[in-house]
Image (cartoon, rainbow, N blue to C red; front, top):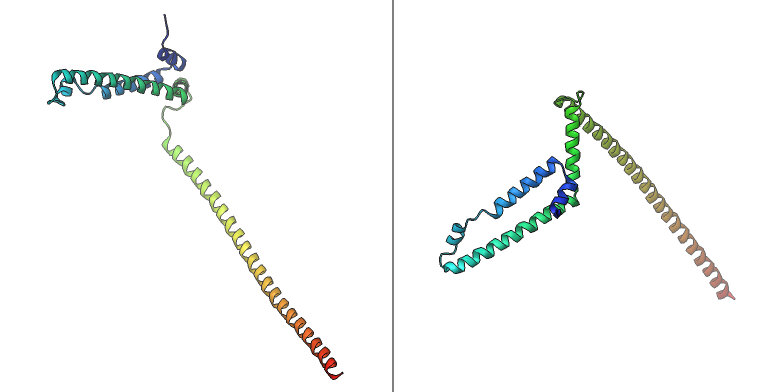
Length: 185
């Protein structure tokens, strides 16, 4: 007995949840691709000869069959690629374990879950507030440091300018002194 690719994939993936998923997908595809009866198809082409309508209908059926196979193959490929089967098997196993565990509560305590989520959000808000305050402190420190550097640069510029002016005056005075000496000789 030869095993088809579909059977091999189903055996490899297995599980009732995956089988149900595949069955639902197949039903959905089948209903979508066979929603047009031959009578409705023939009514869509009233100006065509019956022989032409039959040919078109056969071609339509071939296209639908090919499309159906391609969609099923793509679905199988996606299931294998995304490991849908093993994931659904794991879910199924966890559900079975929880149903068998007498200590596992039947229903979740909504208040407990709400409290947990609220506490987690409060912790996140506190963390983000602390981060924001730290960033603001760093910004203030950088701004004050920039102001100090600007002032130092400005002070340096004023001192340098005064120094340069003094040097120029010194050179001018020496020049005048040299010229005065040379002019009298």
